[in-house]
Length: 234
Ligand SMILES: [Mn+2]
Image 1 (cartoon, helix red, strand yellow):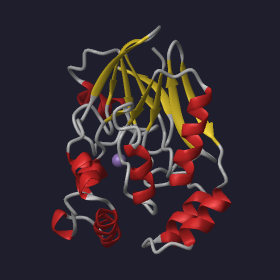
Image 2 (tube, protein in one colour; image 1 turned 135 degrees about the vertical axis):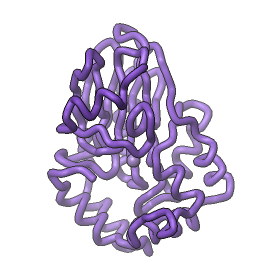
Image 3 (cartoon, helix red, strand yellow; image 1 turned 30 degrees about the horizontal axis):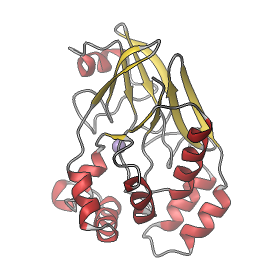
Image 4 (tube, rainbow, N blue to C red; image 1 turned 60 degrees about the horizontal axis):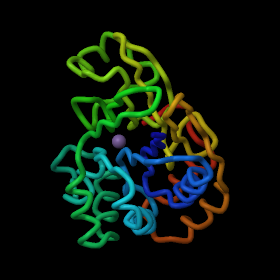
């Protein structure tokens, strides 16, 4: 089995479209959508698209998939930007889409040719909002992965791709499809029989023009991010 992992789409429809087209060109048996689907400027377009694949793809939950449908705000300690966007994104989605996000599982385990069992999570094996970064010290990662029986762990959440070995476990960050740092394109990963970290370029100028014409809050910030991906992740 060959598996494509697409993480942190963050409601960037142009990036999702480009990655799905690229995946179709590869011989992929399964797509794992690694969470953080609808927090960003085009939540409805992204969810309408993903719902076409709800039986075919395997979905896990990211932190914003938990926050958006329950409209988390300042009472949860979130900043104004995140709180406003959570509310706006929830307002764009259908009841069915909100219900879908609420029901996502936290992790999935797949057996992949040449690699064996892989654990897919969003943040870390113990939390959807715990960050494993490209430069997180090993002693901080060790307690996060304690007790995981699989030799390979795939994560996202921190929006920068990496492939590290910590405490005998290979930890791979698939990067972000829609809100990437340190890459000029939509990031994703392919598993089986090897591990490939991919970057699919797409027309960021056109993507930016479209969201700037929309009524998405903070659209200028997202546009700037697409055109000038920052070096540091969130
Ligand atoms: Mn996240």
